[in-house]
Image: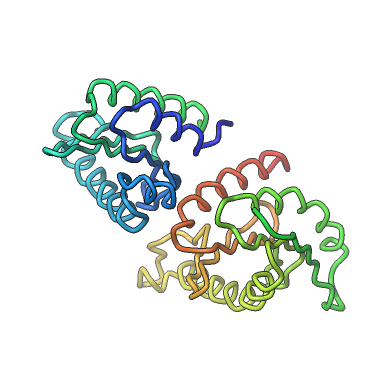
Length: 130
Length: 154
């Protein structure tokens, strides 16, 4: 089985403008992140440890809320959430029933590339965890 | 993980069963795998009474701290399980919540995860360095328990 940290490191490296890539449990707990808190602090661009944990918990709540009513409206499960701002954005995608992957990217990131890369990694992880 | 590994097998229980004696070596691979989880400081297997049958730790102090609280933590977990099974939470004698499959005790020097081993009354104990390690440890524990259950044919 691929090391989760290596998978995230690979995703982070292939996405220009990616600040952090992380896997979070549907219970809101951060499972793994890249870069690590120490390396992220040194780089100065990645969210800190506490900051990312709050973000992970908030995204879990968003997934749960959106996955509830919006799923009914759409008639299918919500698998991806994207939030964009002037200085960057978040993309969160469901890996399986228990996990989701999210990336925080800067304003220079190409959303199309981010989406396809994250989707590819999620498929890989889902296959490994199945 | 750096630091010397400390192996511990508590033998102060005069009536320790043969099964436990025989089980300790079988736990070695499991404990090694648990301790390899980043953030784990102690990995142990305890019986239902809280007696630590086998343990591995990054340092002896962490091992002592954990073994000291395992009995109390398991007693608390058992009490909670009893409460849920009796339906006290749901009221009217009906259980509203299933019995817990995992219990976490959050202490000042780091959380401790307790999870029953499938097909035995043994409990896996995993002490962690900080709360930030809980998600990773729970995820790893889930995989390790699933593989363990598969290997034992449970």
